[in-house]
Amino acid sequence: MSKNRSLIEIHIAVLLFGLAGLFGKWLPLSPFIIVLGRVFFACLSLGLMIIVSQQRLNASRQIDYFLFAGLGLLLVVHWVTFFKSIQVSSVAVGLLSYSSFPVFTAFLEPLFSREKPDKIIILFAVISLLGVFLVVPRFALENRTFQGILWGLLAGLTFSLLSIANRKLTLRYSSLIIAFYQDLFATLFLLPFFFALKPLIDVRGLCLLVILGTLCTAGAHTLFIKGMRKIQAQTASIISSLEPVYGIILAFILLGERPSLRTVAGGLVILGAAVAISFRALKIPETK
Image (cartoon, rainbow, N blue to C red; front, side, top):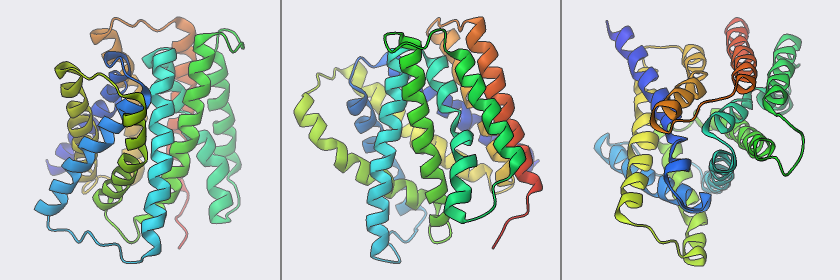
């Protein structure tokens, strides 16, 4: 029964991650301000969770603070480009193009780990990239879908780099600690944009930012970690492939966004390749 509960927790977490994309449409704000609100309230929530769970907050090495800062900046680029993709195109295009991150991971991870690339994973990565191209109706910079794809691909690239770096950090820190420090430094990096842009945020906008930061970020992250106590990491990564599916369904229900057949077809190719890559990873023994 506990395993079924863990599966439900991971699915709810992925659903909340998918819901986060809709805030790019609900909030008429610059992506920099949306991300600032997200990381600020997420940082507060994660800090409270760390205090309650009595985890050690100090880094074990001084150099790790610089690493957390660098990853915080990378997180800023990731989420800003993610919301920019959604704002210039649609929730479906933003989520699907971002979901191409296994393509980048397939090529980048062997470089960082100095391991031989897996030819089958590379093949699926190329298939996923073809799915992205299938979504694009016209390769022209004035086309908003094409713009959304480019921003989404940049979001996917930065997420891939974050994932690779975070795997190294998880050897020394819990996921909550890593997320807290990345959100903290991301908040510090984004504060100048608040004073430069001077956004007008009403009560509705503030409430949405609180929900985005607490429920869809800190809450979803905590649920995901909790669910992984009984579920293998590879299984969780396969379930994570459903994020764009949940997001597109929620966008249809809550925003009335109906993806085109071309977008659906490209999305099926992208998600199919992502799931295949995850299943392939199950068969590859981990190196020490």
